[in-house]
Every structure is written in C-alpha cells, then in structure tokens.
Image (cartoon, rainbow, N blue to C red; front, side, top):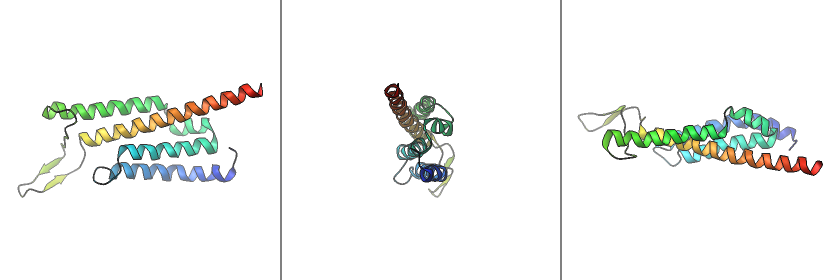
Length: 150
C-alpha cells in the first residue's frame, strides 16, 4: 500500500499501540487482559507497519526474527511453570518471592513472580507467532506478484 497518510500515522501509532500492549499485559494480573491480549496488540502494531511501510520496514521495526521471539517466550513459559514445580512440587504453582505476609495478615512487596514470567512468555509467543505468520503470508503474496510480472 502506498498511502502517505497511513505511513505517517503508522510512525505515530506504533509506539502508542506498543505502550497500550504493555499496559494491557501489566494490568492482566489483577484485571482482564494479560499476555495473550497484550501480545495480540503488539502484533497489530507491527501488522500496521507492514501494511503501511512494507515487509522490510516491519521486520526492521521488530528487530528480531519472529521465530526467535516465540522461542524465547516458550522458554519463559516453561521456566515460569517449572519455578512452581521446584518451589512447591506443582507445575504452574504461583511463586511470589518478593511478597511478604505481615503479622496482621496484609501483604507487602512487588507482584513479580512465576505467574508474571509465564504471562510474559505468552506475550512473546503470541507476538512472535502472529508476526511470523503475517510475515510469511506477505512473503508468499509478494513472490506470487513477482511470478505474475515475469
């Protein structure tokens, strides 16, 4: 697509959509959202860049191969699950090492733990998987156009 308005808007919308995806990911531990929806939002940002500026611009904006992103995400999900297995004997058991229970029953600390790591892995798997599929499909379409022109 060769639209000046879309190209200009995509440069502005990419960081905004990525910030929104991080917000939805972060919020997902206590409210609706999380890694899956955040990953989809991030993938939509790169899909917008791909449609507005082309496949190479989207690959450059992503910085890493989508398959590598998905592989790192899969590793994070497995580590998040095994963390609970090693700590409590149950796969995917929530481990919160930075939260302390006070004598009055309240809790204090940072909400980082195995569930956050698992959710981050889901975020990366969705981002890498969707971008990988999108980029592969766009490659096929571009190759078919080149074959028809010859």
